[in-house]
Image (cartoon, rainbow, N blue to C red):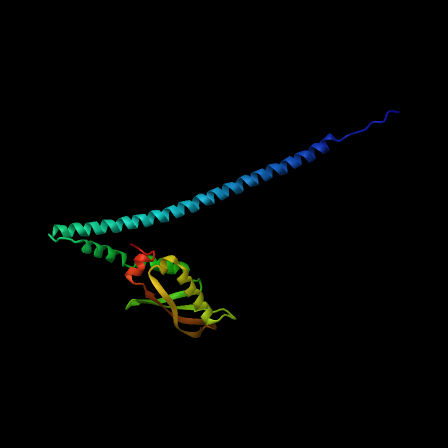
Length: 200
């Protein structure tokens, strides 16, 4: 009698095929992950480049405005001294770009907070607002987080300093606790703005 040994080659091949399939899926996973990282890096680079270009464009516009003012004054027959030119430049550097500041306020403003009034008088910016208070939360903690966000924001802080809490009152509306608050921020002097990294 002849003994026959049977080997199932299909079974071995199927295991090898499965391993190769797993490796292939891993390779594609790595490929797409690296691709996603590269695309993300390109998007971030593009956004940063756009911001830098916008800043450069703003500076060029300021220079153009100053040059136009100088030309107009020269056409009027006025002799401009170095002091006059520096005064014009200082005037430009001392301006507060409110649209930019309001944009930053909207960025750092928490979702459960709203600004109700903004006043700028005697070099003091007064920000009044309301915020929802969650269970176990203190009024001062809510306000202090917003103040810290303003202090740490580079664009807001370049023109304002001494951001501090002024007053608050707690009220209940439709069984929801709400705090009304007021924050004060003192505008920096022109010399502080020009020397401290502000617009020049």
